[in-house]
Figure 1 (spheres, rainbow, N blue to C red):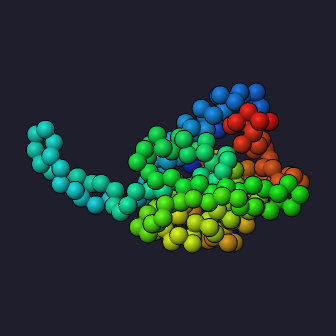
Figure 2: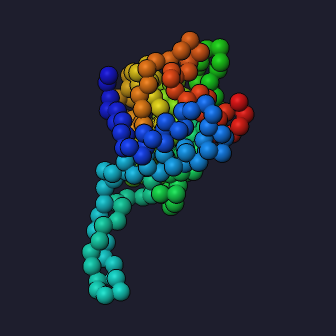
Figure 3: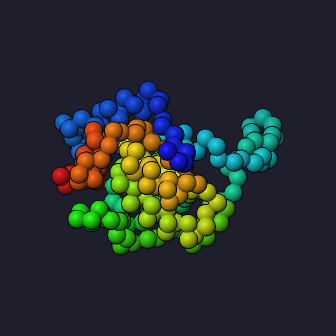
Length: 210
């Protein structure tokens, strides 16, 4: 499988993902679990961000200490379900800039259709993290990164809760330079484009519209 894929196998991530998958998990529990997993994923996906020394003063002495290098991170949520991950990551990265890309999946063709896009005007020297709960067919992820690359950010990473081999192959065929961070790579897609065993429709479960 082309491209870099990192499965976050931390026990807390895997435990919370199991709770998320259960069909009896309520909307409020599902929403809270997505936020909690997202905070844990944010820790892993930002592990290699560059830093530079800055002079500060503690109550006892002056010192040189590391701060993030470059402009603030941009979190880009694929609407609508990506906002669930966005909420959790903002707890860890409260000063991050935020972008939104609105994409829906045509249920007949499974093609991605863009209806909204808004990211910070200046993306140079910014690291972008694109978030969406599922990497299923990969069409929405490909379309979102296509759009984001027009703004020329310093780097792009894609974060999801669950992926599948078909989606990863399609995504990295188009964007081999964009690493994917996920909590699980599941078995396959069904005939309707849903990940199996998956966790159902993440948007419906987040917003109580199932």
